[in-house]
Image 1 (cartoon, rainbow, N blue to C red):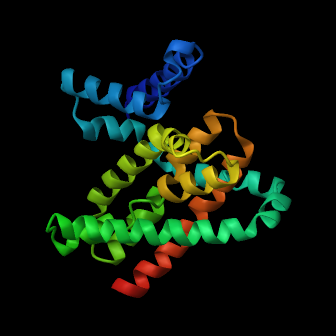
Image 2 (image 1 turned 60 degrees about the vertical axis):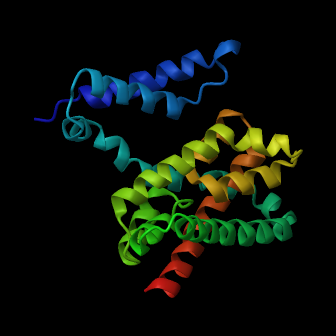
Length: 223
């Protein structure tokens, strides 16, 4: 019988992070990052084997797919918004996807990485279930890809809005497209936390289209 403690601990820590965010001085906390850090510390200091923890908490990983699909609901409620901003959407997607792929390639080349490392980098801006399949097909290391996807998403969730504010990007349409295309579900979750419906719609559409188009491009180029 699987021990449910890992699952329970993960949910409770996440809820605690959301509770902390209600207070102004803790508003800076990102619930996903906070939960991950606390869990790592618990596993490390209590010397709990990650495999045992994952046996309990893997149910949450299985929910990632349905959760991503559920993000499609705001799209159906805002079709007029998508139609009115189609030019910005097309341009944003094209720039986001090309930039993500090219930066992955050149980062790998600059650090003289093996080709397998570079192919593992390529789908870093795509949501995890899709990124893992891309990595397998094009000869990457799925485990490494999963880490890179998580780091990319965390970076976008924590710093995405701050960076866009720094360069004076104020349009919810532009912010949503940029964050969704660059940092997938975790970035989109930061838009949800900020209660910005337009950003959520655009980020959701961006992560879906980015996943589909990146898959097609990677398989076409590397297969």
